[in-house]
Image (cartoon, rainbow, N blue to C red):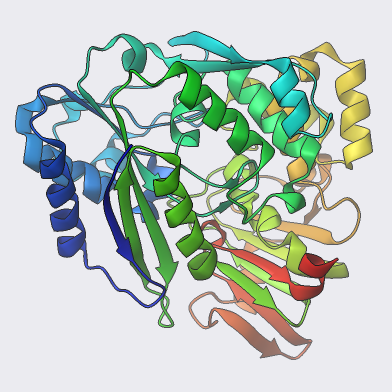
Amino acid sequence: MTIYLAEGSVDRDISDRELGELLVTALRALGTRERVLALPPDFTRYNSRAGLLTCAAHSHYGDRLTDVMPALGTHFPMEPWQVEKMFPGLPSGLIREHRWRDDVVTIGEVPAEFVREVTEGICQRAWPAQLNKLLWEGGHDLILSIGQVVPHEVIGMANYNKNVFVGTGGAEGINESHFIGAAYGMERMMGRADTPLRRILNYAQDHFCTHLPLVYVLTVVGVAENGRTVTRGVFVGDDHDCFERAAELAVEVNFTILDEEFERVVVLLDPEEFHSTWLGNKAVYRTRMAIADQGQLIVLAPAVRTFGEDPQIDQLIRAYGYRTTPEVMAAVKANDDLRDNLSAAAHLIHGSSENRFTVTYCPGRLTEAEVRGVGYDYADLETMQRKYDPNQLRDGWNEDSDGRFYFIRNPALGLWAHRARLES
């Protein structure tokens, strides 16, 4: 097991050019490869620098890079303009669509006894490890899993083998993984590299995938004081240590610990990146540990047009709504449609404030009736953007006639928590 590259620090500013050069140095250390598969994230992780790295890999390997499969998970397939923007110059014929309900194979099961142990008895069933058939049967001599390590609501820290088992996984594995995270409790996991679900995925990798030529390319991306996204680190390797080193830096770069709770926090969902509450509810997940009881979360969502990224999941969200955990768990027990789609149930739990604070959505393309129907408050986007003009606000604390409030320009790049919540 090897780390081919470990570069970065909290104050490092790795330019795009240097990032590409660092990757090529690591790829040369791997030796000659003849059939390469790249697994970058989709456009919802545009800021990960995975597009740039995929293009650098293509420049290095040429036609030996035979396939590029964005790790969609349950997300919408990438649109042509997204492919062009994220992978400039990459031949579109290399792109392969991951169909999470159809193109997968179950490669093994993590034993129920292990799942029970790591989840402290919360989950009792064996976990099915599933992959897209292209990974398992494609005959590649290198699989490059590329992406950003950042705090995450389902697994603690995003990426590494989550990009493989969830990003290119199947319905059963994705459903179970999301539900494990929700049942265990996201606030127990976010910002932590060692979590129950991570141990389950590590087990699957160690027991079922040792013959696969998997190499991970992991970035750490932060936000500079001027609001510019900046690459702080890049790690390339084929083992757990590579991920853990990236996660250690990501906690320093992406986790903001505050001494003052948010009585009011305003979050912007970039219109290119966020089109659904399935993705946009990072505004809820990443701020919840910093919001005061009876506080207010205001979500400016100009391009949000739907709830789920998948039509079936969208209907479930509309039907059951973002209710409290006991209400969602009762609905799972009573209804086959929700029980058969546990990732949707997990998402409903993740998106709930548990009646502790209010969530006010200001969407560009959902009606007031739709928003209130899933359990959120609603406000008119145009009115709220006049009150909270993103072009005039600075990241962090601001002040208006109603007092102090906090502004977050991109919730996907961080995690915010009040110090007392980490000490309790």
